[in-house]
View (tube, rainbow, N blue to C red):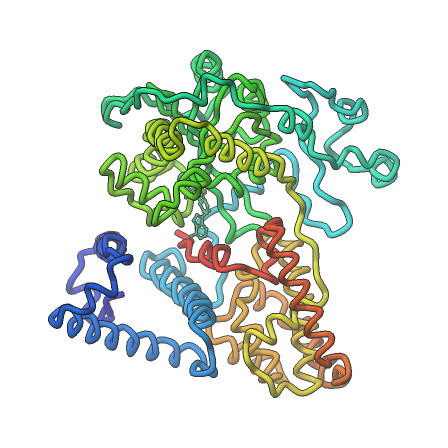
Length: 555
Ligand code: AMP
Ligand code: MN
Ligand code: ZN
């Protein structure tokens, strides 16, 4: 990122907005250019002397700058980390920096008058506060499927679910009727087989330009009806979602994109959150094909937020895999088949913002607008590869079925997960008190994140958590100082954190608790949980993808 000399800030730019726009477009340029680099030819490029020299010089500058930023934020044993861990740390540092930048910009905007850096920034009201059904992050009550009627059923919905209230959830009832927690469309998905018509070659249909395509932003019941009238008569639809996970414990779906062969729809899933199960009429209809790209998360988000299930899905990501394409991303497919440069930097935009800015709408539409055409091309290619035998195509449908059968589960709290964080931090010299502090802070962070409906990284980033446990500050001012930029919820709970740290000093963890066996066990846990792909924001065991989601700017 370009460094901005703060004294020149207002000499160069007329106002904060102009500054923000300039910086933003520069960042976008950089991302766009770096996305264009042909990574697969990297080794070849490096054999050209002039390129080699330039790239090496540039890498050195970037690394130096990163190192400067890093040492400014927190001292850590950088050299001991492997590449993945360095990337994770950088992401954490980025988060902290973005928070600082957003905070400073608020101040310049006049939103925040106080010179104290810890004042709560509440520019954006959390949309989940307006949800009709309050989000339940408790560890006691599991996630209950939101569905109360079941269109296109082969096996009827358990009677009990038709009569059940959303709130309050009766735990005895769950014990008596464990089938409530089952996947409501498991049998329908198992029974689904693609029609022979779907297994033959077709003439690919390239869509009209986005500018010439009919488009509707659906944020009222009336518009939803207009959309339903159109999609109920289609045989193929492309679908995608945008999700937010930084200012929420379990995350929530902000937008749904649907494209037919002729029209695009963007659905405001924040305002229509409780109205969209009507889409099950089409989405569980085995006669209508739904095309997604990389649907793993979408399938879970649809269940979690909207009570929607999918029967008859084709995942273009799975198709790209079967075809052994060199890159499996949608951006690559868009470029290869449609010559479209997707502005993928919006992937991590703040999708909660309303009204949704024009560029966001444009990007969101691109995600589904060309997808049916890409599907046509992949379908033909899968048939070509096997001399018109439909085996590979069937395999893609089978893999897509497995994805559709995924069941959303609320993240559990793993009391051993702090050990994973400890291992990843490479701080091998923690004594009993430091380990006790780590364990207590880790559990505190998860509890606060659930209560306040925030991600654990928003409550207290991993790096800061480790740092606090390492330093064991003796008083409240010491806690503030060891955080540099004090997160809102740390400031709010300073006294409690102080008490936890005292407790840790007084009651160190016995070293025997940390013998290798236990560490092995926690690593084992880590593997099993992350491979199930269900703990979207436990924070405890964030994978890189979730970590990356935190880069979302708060403004
Ligand atoms: P997409 O299907 O690419 O439009 O992505 C859907 C949603 O997944 C986005 O709105 C983000 O919430 C999340 N997401 C996508 N890519 C990433 C990533 N690289 N890291 C973290 N979250 C991501
Ligand atoms: Mn997607
Ligand atoms: Zn998308």
